[in-house]
Amino acid sequence: MLRAHAPGRVNLIGDHTDYLGGLVLPMAIDLGTTIEGERGGDAVVLRSADEDEPAVVPIAIEDPTTVEPGWARYVAGVVAEVQPALGVEGTVATTLPIGAGLSSSAALEVAVALALGFDGSPLALAQTCQRAEQRATGVPSGIMDQLASAAGEEGHALLVDCGVLTTRPVAVPEGVEVVVVDSGEARTLVGSPYAERRAQAEQAEALIGPLREATTVALKGIDDELVQARARHVMTENARVWAFAEALEGGWLDEAGRLMVASHASLRDDYEVSTPTLDALVARLVDTPGVYGARLTGAGFGGCVVALTEPGALDEGWTVRAAAGASVSEA
Ligand code: GLA
Image (tube, rainbow, N blue to C red; front, top):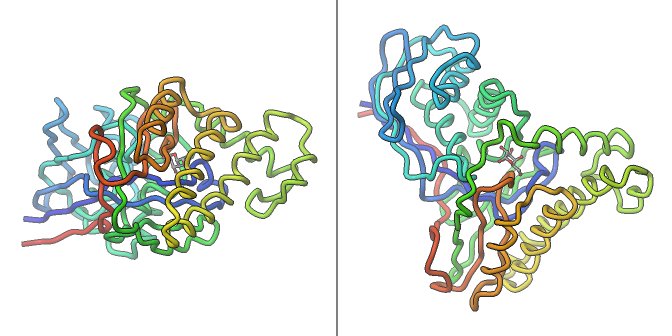
């Protein structure tokens, strides 16, 4: 019997920067997806307690986009990338809320890749699963979610430089809680303006070069106000990620919280990926005693909010712990 487990992730700060070679600070969490099964046959057959229909994917699959039901496309994307010699038959179980912005799809992809016998570094695993996700959905998503799931470290968030693809663990200090609250607004990247936002930011890069390196003065070289605002978000968000990592390491939690609130405002005003429900939720949490800061986490357009708090400040949502990355065992 093999058992592959992959965690979901929450992003503490740094959104809509990964696909531009920027900085992100996600952490793998103690909610995740587990596959149990046996290798063999020429198909991947997975049943999930959360889905009516199983995923049945031939190992020779070439086009994941035609696979039904929808959740099986993520499985198919991974099968198409890994090209295993043998299938797997088993079950999928998850403790993650599905489609709520905690990377349930990345966790599924990473768990499937390990169940299929993928053998490589956490980075190679993440890159394989990123390609699988893009192939399955057609959405040009970045590397953050898969990398957080593959390379997480217990007790730490991961400062990822998505330009050179290096990771540095940043300890989550004692005496602080990371709380994730679901807005209840379901979201999926498919059909969202994610690809449009990415294209707008790339339009800015075509004008002033990599946003990662640009100075704020260079923003003046962008006439289109909307494109300028997209670029401003990316540039200021990269700076906030550095500052947040430093604040966390220094134990300056008020400063860390302030940076989260500024990140939310930038995602709302400059990148326009928030919603009135997310804004209201962030405002309410930030007004609660003992909350250092809160922001939308992940792509936006609904989904979850993450808050940094004193222990016990919030009695809602999931209090999550920084967990180790994905693993597989065979008994
Ligand atoms: C989604 C994508 C990530 C990243 C975030 C926004 O989660 O999968 O690659 O772009 O949105 O930061």
